[in-house]
Amino acid sequence: KKVAILISGRGSNMGALIRAAAEGDYPAEIAGVISDRADAPGLAAAGAAGIPARAVARDEHADKAAHEAAIEAALQELGAELVCLAGFMRLLSAGFVSRWRGRMINIHPSLLPLFKGLSPHAQALQAGVRVHGCTVHFVTEETDGGPIVAQAAVPVLADDTEERLAERVLKAEHKLYPLALALVASGAARMEDGKTVFPTPG
Ligand code: GRF
Image (cartoon, rainbow, N blue to C red; front, side):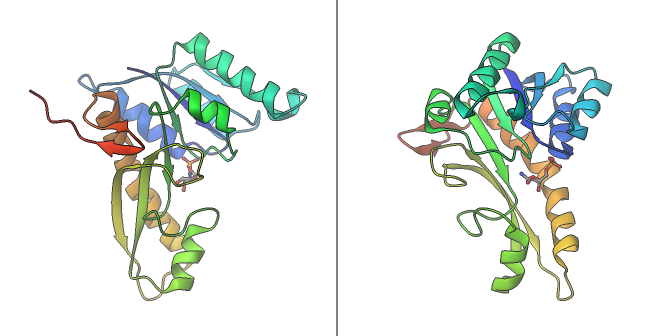
């Protein structure tokens, strides 16, 4: 399956996906990287890995609709069959999301449905949870609300700061995302009637 990765910044999850897809028997190939910001460090990292990478910057387009049309055009050019949002910090319209329904996944650094939205680590510390983690889910119109594909848990330690907790979760993200993409790219996990199903082969 041809995969396009959308980023806005560092792209560390993008890097994990690129490394995983470089393995021979991985069920997906990274066709390209698109950033909504021209200054995203992830663009250089993708280029260094030999992956076509380009910015489709928001400020180069009159409005959200034009910007999304440009992203869609770039996805078509890449022949993308699946989209991975990886540190992509822009809300996509319902139209875009419905066109990619079942073919677009995102990683969120919390055990959804807990701690949706921004600053999930601060939310976790504030709530006093002792287990935290990350979630890969299909993207739907509800932000951070789509059907879950896979999750990974990490402990919250007594003296954790937001930074230390975020770092621990990020390491788990880099293992989880490649696994979750492989499930979706191989058809082992699919979105059906708004739920994730794991059709057993045969
Ligand atoms: C990560 O915590 C990811 O979960 C969130 O954005 C953060 C930055 O990710 N979506 P990356 O380093 O740009 O992949």
